[in-house]
Length: 215
Length: 180
Image (tube, rainbow over all chains, first blue to last red; front, side):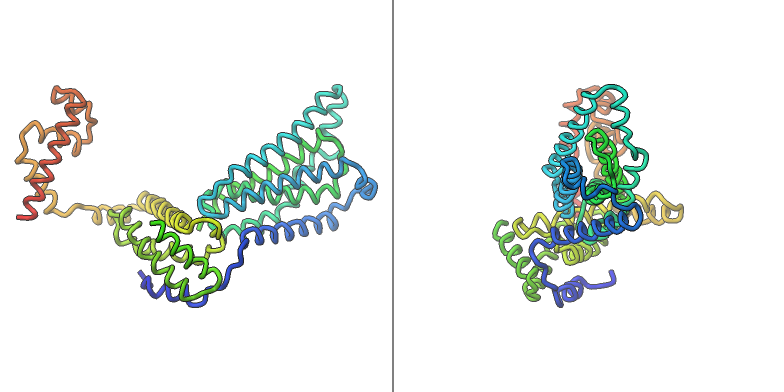
């Protein structure tokens, strides 16, 4: 043993920096702002905003999409607020996330069932089905990285689940920003590809978290 | 216990506000409790106890932002300790399965003292023969109670009772020797 425990205690207690109440929430809000900004810069510099953005923002569907992904991000935030603490229990947050997901995927399914065969195919594929989830995941990478860095300074005891929540959090934020680029306007499309984008980011977070969220 | 919790929590809250003497007292009070906690769970490796105490104190310090002021302090601190303990076990297991040279070292470190094995043999020899066989079958050869009962021609329940009695008198004999 290199250090005597009493010496270690003296060292740790020498000058304890004050920690404000709500420090955990504050750090994740900071990460959400940084991740959202990074995604915005990527959309503006790389993908471009949709041509009809001003018009689209007056419509209902633009805001439904934003609401769905923002709520998934909120579920991720809420789960992280629990999981960042040792043995934190995220049950309510996960339930909330599952309900949001079920509600919007359910709306998509309803729309799909109501349509005829050819229309179903068009709604499912839109004009960007092959890139949507991958774009969301890419836009989410800076936010996911920042979230994992912040989590490494906290005390998560379930690395995979915490990584998944980090991915859902970063993915939800990024997908909301992605709505500025994406012109798709059916619940079928959003319920499928946006969901896959956010869950995919969650899966990536879980795999990476298993390795990097140890302390 | 609840008094202790209230005192520790009050010290922690002062520490979070930057009160160095209160924080110092908290860490040393907690350190003593952590030492007892780890000693009880690591009888096979008492040399690692102090390392774990220190690792946990450092985690308490560097991760203190994750303590929720509205919650009790003790469960939070011991959740950190539990994580460090599990992590410690996991790492030891990995090490024990790796290279050959380490394996020899581990064997040497875990070889029982010659005296204790001989004492056990001698004390065992003084038990009635049926009890001796039962203890050997279950505790040394690792048979189940049902298997040992079969060998001795009794039921599992009877074997359990007989084994309990045998171990009790074995313990008495070995203690008697140590005292004498």
